[in-house]
Length: 256
Picture 1 (cartoon, rainbow, N blue to C red):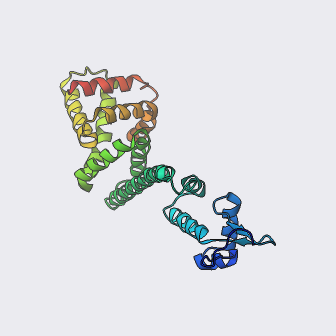
Picture 2: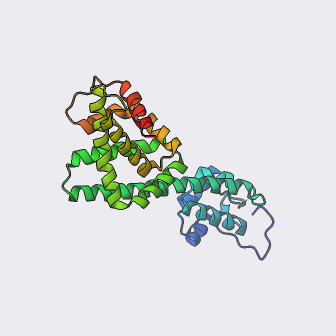
Picture 3: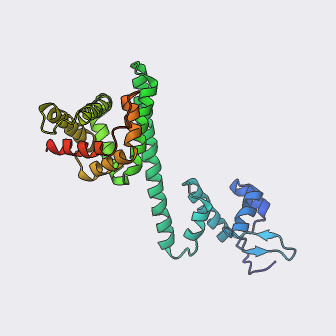
């Protein structure tokens, strides 16, 4: 057997180590092939022998795996046990990823709960799915901080407040489309009333945050026609074009 064996240091074959740790021999072979856990020693006949240092490394690997880290993330983190820098960076990146997963799951849970409530209220399932789908797509336009901010806003509104908001904004959008088609001036009393409703929605939904409102504008310019199809149903929308979004911006500015 190669290496310096102290009488007080144990050695494990791959089978014994598998039994000790609850892993499979195949898993340990895979770790060896990846360079993630190579046995410190081998017998003259080439059989693996793992030391206590190898066992400690394996426990570290198992802990990081239980935290949800991929094997290719773990190896760089354990390059130098005396230097915590690489491990800290990997853990920090992984924590950001976990935070994002938690946010997405929380958002999915809220949307599922809201959808069930809408269906229990006998709203048309197609309409609800379409409008909530628009909201889901919009989330891709937000930063992590903005998503967290909107989560707080949604919690403050409560389930009833979110339901009122989801019923209000399609109606306001449809009203703006009607005025745009009629070429109604933005200082018209009815348009100004619509602008105030739009401002209230912006405040309730986004806290009137200018960066989030800018993201909303970008979203509507890119996906707005799809949203309008869901809001207006069978109405023809090919005549609207990008001018609608400029009109919407002027309507919103008239409320300031």
